[in-house]
Length: 196
Image (cartoon, rainbow, N blue to C red; front, side, top):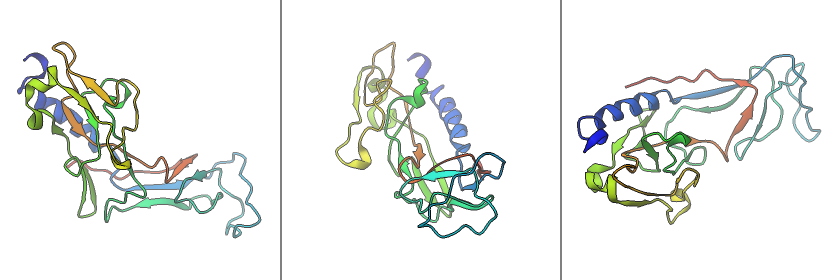
């Protein structure tokens, strides 16, 4: 079958798995404390308990104010559960925008929380569809509910036709983001992650 035969796909899974291990398992984002200009604090917000505000700004549905003290914890998730109000799954065949071998979807087979650890587990598409599908099938991931909508149509991200020279992404994985719930700039955050 060429490059994507049963001997090489496990190696691709290992590569994707190691890449996924670099994703933060427990994310703590702290407000920065350098000497850049600080945002002003609106009058209707409680006063900050510090001499000056941090340069950090944040927005999103989970952000309740616009200014923070230097070093203040502004986002945390210890993954007691997979909080879909914080985290949004990407759902795209775009392969991260650089033609990687995986595609991302919202499936508990590929992403789940267990004992306070967020797991990303790649799986093989061919295990569900058969290997021939990779080189001849049509994969559409438009979805029928908000959790299954295609999140990025770029790079044929919502629909792929497999051919003998252009296989459908053989690895299913997960990628999460806080695009609607939490966005920030100018902060420091040592993510804690481990490979298991």
